[in-house]
Image 1 (cartoon, helix red, strand yellow):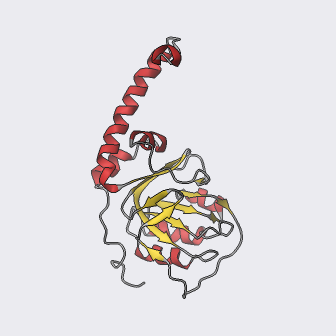
Image 2 (cartoon, rainbow, N blue to C red):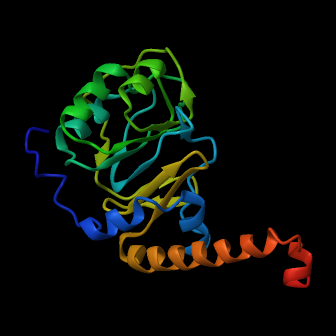
Image 3 (cartoon, helix red, strand yellow):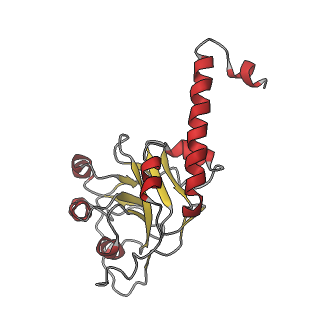
Length: 215
């Protein structure tokens, strides 16, 4: 795992796309893109104020083992968001304060893990963007014989996450948008936000949604 380019050389959203997506909510882009990409609802930010936006760097790890997350720290590029599955064993502390310090030093954008983490208060204090199923103190192993995967297609819930897809997370949860659809999803999100702003102006007059839509 010493060659930093061996798993990180994949296409990512452009800098302009990432800047445009930075202010779009997870719920908005999920709806605007066709109700796609919602990761399991149990994955939530450690702090509701946390927000993540960046390219996915996918990680397949072993149940109760965090070695492949260490490999990912060695391979991911600045701005990448680690999107991790750990084989269904959620109750372990796969990530903690020390790994967070390393991730921040390398400029990573955040962590989305289908499992638990530890040192939650410390990570909130460090202001690193962590989305997880919760916190758990159980220690993990490091089995060199387990064949995990980096930057490979990763099933997570009913979503297939590809390296380089756009990850957006906030207090409502996490959504993943396929890289080739990012431009259209951003445009659709902006249009949706504009329509909703107009609709809220009408609602403030006292009209109801039943009146407006004729349901």
